Picture 1 (cartoon, rainbow, N blue to C red):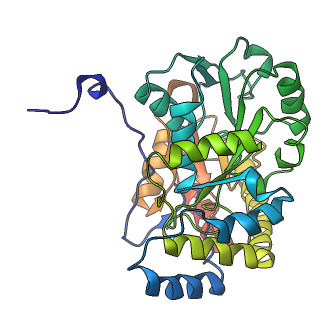
Picture 2 (cartoon, one colour):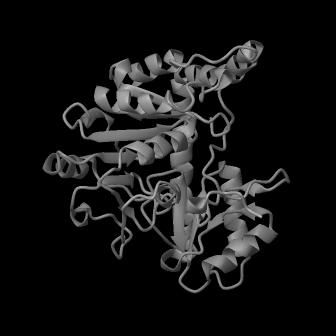
Amino acid sequence: MSFLDSQFQHLVPYVPGEQTRTKVIKLNTNENPYDPPQNVIEAAKEAAKTLSRYSDPTCLQVIQPLAKHFNVAPENIFLGNGSDEVLFFLFQGFMEKGVQFPDITYGFYEVYSDLFHLKTEIISLKEDLSIDLAEYTGEATVIIANPNAPTGLMIAPEVICTFAKNNPQRLIIVDEAYSDFSEASLVPYLEAHPNILVVGTFSKSRHLAGARLGYAVGSKQLIEDLNKLKFSHNPYSVNAMTLACGEASLQAQDYVDECTQKIIATRNWTQQELQKLGFETTNSQTNFVFCQHPTVAGETIFKQLKEKNILVRWFNNPRIANYLRISIGTPEEMATLIQAIKEIEGVDI
């Protein structure tokens, strides 16, 4: 017998990429393949000594250096328990007139819109898998991942700014989980466009997927309203060890940048090698590649790679059922992946 409220009985929860402790090459959840910087590890150890006390609800030890990193004021920064919590508050409190997002994008958007019973319009990507903002009409809040996942494609900031300027009464949320691997961010444009809010994460380029630290950058009013929701829910949602790790990460920017450039270089190499094997790839601006083979089904490659202890992501979605999303690992891991793909029957060598 279920005691769950009937309004939630229908929910279809988000399905994360497979997690495993067995020895595999794990290329299915877009994690950073490199260890956190040493000062982050040391900061976590030191913070562990304070776990008998509540964490600082103001999160200033991260907000202040993050604001400096983005060249904004601390009042323009919000911190949450991963970007998923930031998105949770946005769907909960900023979409009274409804929400619009693409049909192929981060799966939590649809989960949250269902959870909060929002008026939702899901707009199809174009045939080339790009987002056409001209199709986002009306008054609803718009949320897009830029670069988008799982396609890896991005919209130029100028295009989004023009859209925001032409729709001043609409909130435009830009989820920049992967922006550090791309050509641009919307953060430098926020002062001129107070109806744009940027959401980001420490999970990808900053090596902290397991720490759960996300943020939003936007106008003072937007950040105040986000904090109103957070402090009505859980003021201590960002724990002390995560705050310490986030602060240390911002002190190790050179290492973060070095690893990011390694990932970009490995991504470009991987795309070229896949193309040599007959794969079609999108112009990914992320830490993953999105690809399909013209004659071998994506599900087939996914299953055969798993038999070789290599995990990639396959989505059971008719529009992209032939595609694979492959996270970028170390150069050695990606070389092993390419060799494994060469051994799959039907792949051109």
